Image (cartoon, rainbow, N blue to C red; front, side, top):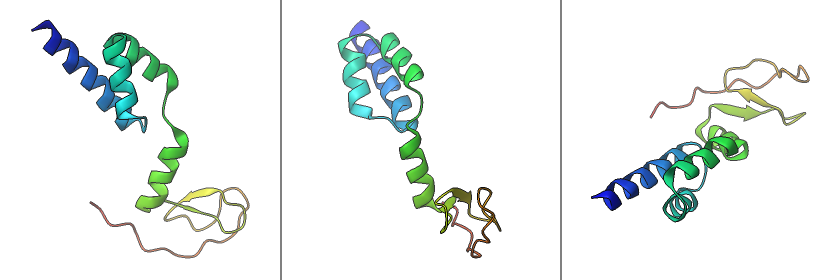
Length: 96
């Protein structure tokens, strides 16, 4: 019974890691090998993977890059917030 609860907490830590754009399998193995509490602590200290988060937002259409300075801007922005270059109008991203 205790092993089942231990594994469920380890899986919960891994799911939270995946939601924060971290590796599911690495945090699952870490949580099983050490403890889920230490795995969760490491996950919270590590924070989000900003590079993967930006990439996911670009792929989904929520963000786009300025052609001039490569700064990220919302899909509905008229001008780049960094350099002031007018951005091309864009079709809104599809809701899933």
